[in-house]
Image (cartoon, rainbow, N blue to C red; front, side, top):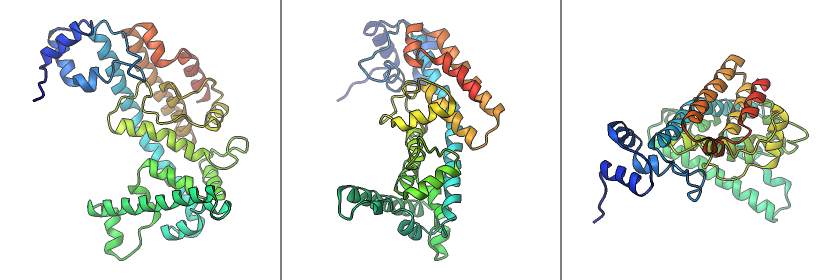
Length: 324
């Protein structure tokens, strides 16, 4: 039988084992609200468990937890806005090629494998990606039909094929990035031009759009599942150098690594500007980020704050405002 601890027992553990000053009804409520395992356990380190935060007072734990929650509230609506816009801009360009029928698109546009020698390693790799995408799309359609999703059921009940715009409604951001990845180079470049992110110097093969999607996807999924985001631990892989160079060139902001949350703010502001969000809204977003960052700085030791936010935070904020 597994024996657990009451909230009082957990507070004693924080005091006796972790040397954190904690006590009183306020701290008890805060710990109950955040949870010991989701809260303290999730916020006791930066990026990896071996890099523990040297907490001395429970108010410091609360400050980082609240910062993380406010970041998620701040980013979520803008991530959704970017996802919707990217799908619609892509759809608008794809329809130019003659049809919104997925089978037509699969045969004529999702054929990046054709540039490789038949049967070769790269050919097989691209063909597998293409077939995996088809499977993912069909699984999404099946799942959403069985879940009574009206946008899918409507087409089946009228004996029609499911068009691309309905498919884009039910696939997730990662699957959408996979869709872009499988497009042939000519179409990828046209999609990038439609989004105004094409560059002959950094985007010669049209891969920047999928790079952006896969980067934003990690944050989007972390926010949607209420995972920890303040230290960017959600990042599944390092973004390609072409994307970093592209964003730095476009924004005139140096030192972007996507190791700190400020860099994700930068790419969101960049993308929001590209889809036509007004300067006043972008300034409001940066101002809100700055306010929650300053509140964190006031409530934790400066070395910890610098480890979380990076030593060039203020410089990047100034440069971001200039970009806006």
